[in-house]
Image (cartoon, rainbow, N blue to C red):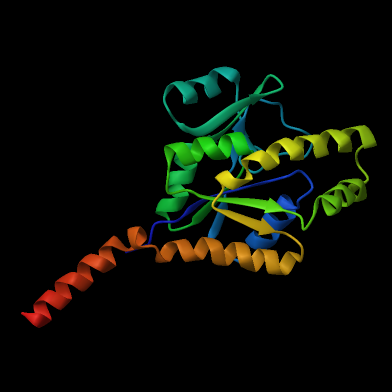
Length: 208
């Protein structure tokens, strides 16, 4: 019998290196599925439906909300974003460990609906390093970087709602730590009900 996959949510400050971490994890291990979000925003150049996002109309998205077909959803700058339940449940049933890379607000909603979800928050080794990484991207103005730092200050307030804090200092070590954290969940008693039942039955049969 194929073991059910684990649902893990990864959040973190902008600039903490979540995207790089996810990409490296998926390249190294093949037992993960990165959940694809649905959105009502228009595709950007090079984006493909079903790869970056499931692109849909407002009516289609609202129908998903009405039918409770989203694990979580939120509205940002007049566009909806959400996690389709069917995709996640399908992948977990296949035995894949599903990772959602979402904001704190969405992460806490998922944990509310699915208490067994593993919440992991990715941080750089220090606030100074975070600022250095944001500047190092070379894609944003100092004004935007200041906004991101202010947002990180707010987000830090929710860090203790997470199960684990993962320091992304050395990428390879962070990938291994993330992999080990998720895999360790498979050893929890609740994930091994079948094994526990069989062990009890076998012991009872031997003892007679």
